[in-house]
Length: 504
Ligand code: C2O
Ligand code: CU
Image (cartoon, rainbow, N blue to C red; front, top):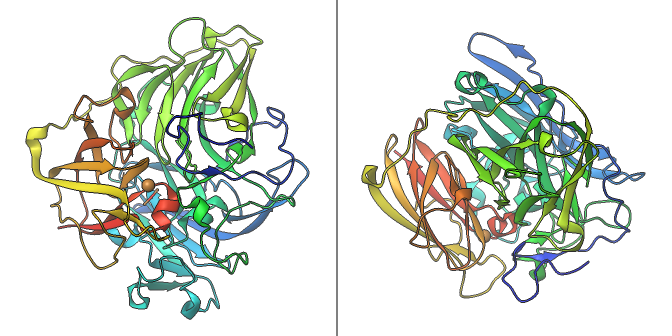
C-alpha cells in the first residue's frame, strides 16, 4: 500500500501511517450496500422506551468468503441503528459478554453524567480479573481507585433533550477506545423531532445512514490493529509507529468494503459519519452532476442547518457527521457515480459506488429554510478558555497533551455553568479532531478569519488543523457533573489526549 500522504504536503488523510492489509484487497463495487437493522425496544411505557443490547464476539463476513471476528453490539458491525425522538427517554441496558471491559458513549448525546460513558466507568464481563486491568499504555494516568466497575451490565439512561440529529454510539474504554472501536463497537443513533418530520426531505429507503471507516486485515481475514489489550492478542503496548493514528487500506461503508448501491434518479438523503479511528476524509462525487453542486448539506453533527448549503466536497475529520442531499436526477440513467475521497491515496481514493438504474417520480424537495436555528453570538459568552492540543515534550507513548498535560481522572480543566455560553479556543500543533461531550457548539472563527462552510451548524466535533486556531461558542444545558473534551483521533485519545470539565 502507498503512503497516506500526498507527496510533499501535510498529510491530507493523516495524521498516521497506513497499515497495509496482508491479503489481496477485495474487488471494488461488487457487494451491495447494507443498512444495519433498527434496534427494537423490548418494552415501552409512558416514560421511556427500553432496550437491551448485548456486546459479544461475532463472526461476520466482511471480506467475501472469509470470516472476521468482531467485537460488536449484538455481535454486529456496525451495531444496530437506534431510532429515537427528542425528549423521549431511551433506556438502554448494555450487557458485556466480550472478553474485555467496555464503556459506551453516545456521541453528540445530551446525556446525564452517569450515562455518558466515562472512560473509567466500566462494564466488566463475568469473571474478568479487574486486578489485571492495567495493561494499558497509559496505566499510570488512571489509578485503580479511579475505576468504577459495573458487573456484567449497565443501564445507560438517555433523556435526549436535543434537536433531531445523527448521533452515534461507540466504545470509550480508558486506554482502549482505538482497538475496541476498530474491532467493531460502533453504531448509529438517530434522533428525530416534529420540526424535521414536517419537512419534505427524502424519506424511507431514500434516507440512508452511511458509516464510513477504514480497516486493515490480516491474512486470515481478522482485523489488523497494531496495538491491543493482551487478552485479545499477544502484542504488548502500542507500536510507536502508529502513535499518530492508525490508517487502514480498505474502505468500509456500513461494514462492507467499497459497496455498490442502485438508486433511482431522485433525491437521496445521506447521513454520513466518519467513523475512522484517525483518517480524515474529503468526499466528492465522480463524475459530478450535470448541473448544480454534488452535495446539498442540510445538517451537521447536531441537526439541521438554518438553510441548505451547496458543497463541492465534504471535508470530514473523525466523528464528524454531514447530513446531505444528493440529487441523482442530475445524472443520466446508467451513470455510475463514485463516492470518492480526495484525501485518500491508492485504495482509499474510492469509498463506494451509486448506480443510477431507474426512473422514478420524486415528491421530495429541499426547503429554503430548514429549521429555527438559534445563532450564538460572542456577546453571550460569560467566559473564555483555551485548550492547546499538542505532542508533549518527552515524546513518550502516552504523550499527547491538552494544556501541557496528559489525562488525569480527578482534575477539572473548566467548570462552566449550565445554561451559559462560553467561548472556547482550540489551538493545535497537528491534526486533532476536537470533541466536546454534553455541550454543542458553533464555530465562530478559524485562524482569525471566518469559519469555513464545513463548520456550519451545531457541532460537537471540529477539525483543528496543524498550527490552527478554532474558536467556538459552546452551550451547556440540562446536566451537571463530570464530562470531557478530547481528541477524536482514537489513538491520540488512548494516549491520554483528554481532559475533564465539570458543569455546575
Ligand atoms: Cu465519540 Cu468522547 O467520543
Ligand atoms: Cu489528536
